[in-house]
Image 1: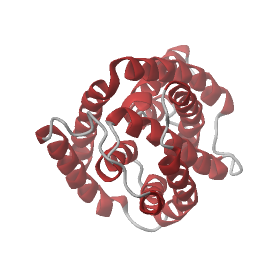
Image 2: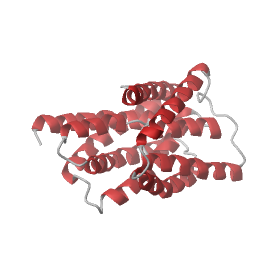
Image 3: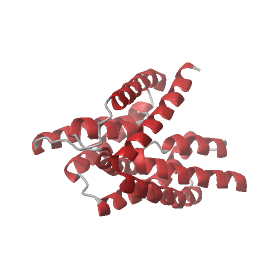
Length: 254
């Protein structure tokens, strides 16, 4: 690999870690950069290397949030467990269901998410009253299962959907929703690596080098989110989801 390509990957990992720690969507940055810098590698190797880098940043962001705020573990842990298990099913379905069938649906859902978030300026800025604990756990399992399956099958927008679901269904503010999403993202990354590592689809030196920069970006992102609160996370969420809509729209209609 050329030195310029490695520098590009490290910068992309830094920015991806920052974005992921605040609002999800780091894969939008890392995966295209890996594909560009490693044109000779199989797609599975690109995705495996991306997951290796991402899991370190996501894990560190989750730990930083956990040290500073009270994470909603009663939501995050059931959702993470269900997401871990169901992401395997999503990966299996990926083998036979064309992604072209899913892309327009995801695009439409993301547009609705953005519209809903923008027209409700108080959405996710302040936490609402929580659900009854038993109901909350059941919903957490369903949400984790659905989003874990989706992340294993398709992926783009999974972090945005997680945050939106945690705000809308569980009445969390954006800061606590983002922190819970990091726990679930860690689980889905671990599930992906459980497949990619034994099959040899990971570039360890490249992935670990990127992981260091991903961690640095995640620490910066989590620090800013904790300092500026839910309002900051909300606007980064809107920006990331808008970029994702533009990317999916281009891939769908171009």
